[in-house]
Length: 127
Image (cartoon, rainbow, N blue to C red; front, side, top):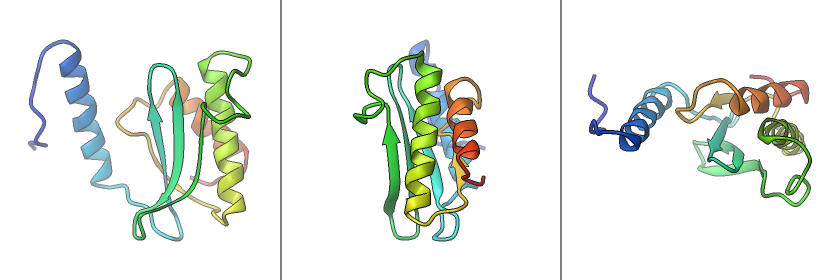
């Protein structure tokens, strides 16, 4: 089960492991017009969520901690991830999306990723 990512040492090993996990996830997760893909991209400082229709290659809705409504907000990074989840769900609903498939991007489903997903579910987006 080779995924085409070389083994390395230290931080490079972590990046390679994340790339392998992401490839493994993307083999099974694809967005359609009925159920687009909710993609989460996480960095050390910010988090970005996009709702993508993979068949057309279009982004239907997006939100991030760099949005003016969230930027410089109160709370820790998990609280900001919750705000991003609620905002992307609201924008997806406005675009006519009711259900999505969740793409965690090779990240563990914990912490900020789980906070974003839970907030999107609470806002009415179905996974």
